[in-house]
Length: 226
Image (tube, rainbow, N blue to C red; front, side, top):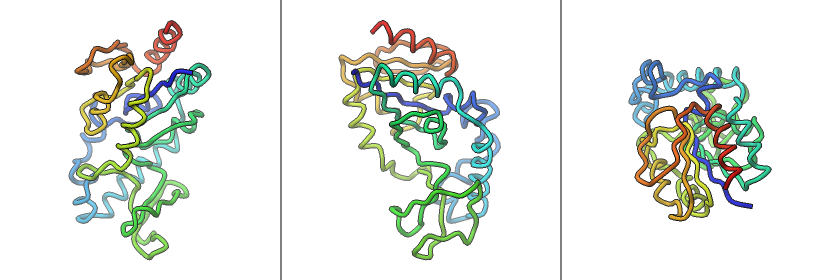
């Protein structure tokens, strides 16, 4: 069974109703990155950071996986599918995907501020000041913020190097280090990009210029011919 590695971004979740960051009307038009998504923001105003992620978490619990998520699950019948996602939502898991690696953390979890190995599932949508880990330290969102290292990057590179087919869905390939994963795809492995916008790829790729739901449906048909 061929190994299909899929890198997903905000465009996959957008059709479920999750706000994207970079598109018109996206989250970054309402919030400044430096105010809510950096270690400095956390040190400066923990309440604002917690509220930002609480609202995102509340929204996540009100939406459900879309057809693109479901189609990726269906592909598991014909391929060994590994998803590497830049998204912090759990829509891939809720749809039924078995192998999901989160590069940028998980919205429904919290993390100790003194011991990063202590990670907890959040009950409901609120994480508040005074919510502490077992060592007595304030909990923070389990999110990789701008300026922080990406702990799962090495694992993502290892998975990419083993891909027989590599697919990019709903990401601009402008966020690093995630975008650099294309450099680790074997020269003999084809690359497919599903995104309605022009996406720069330094290597030749098949570009399906559709939104995620329609694009992944087309991808599914194309993969049957490989």
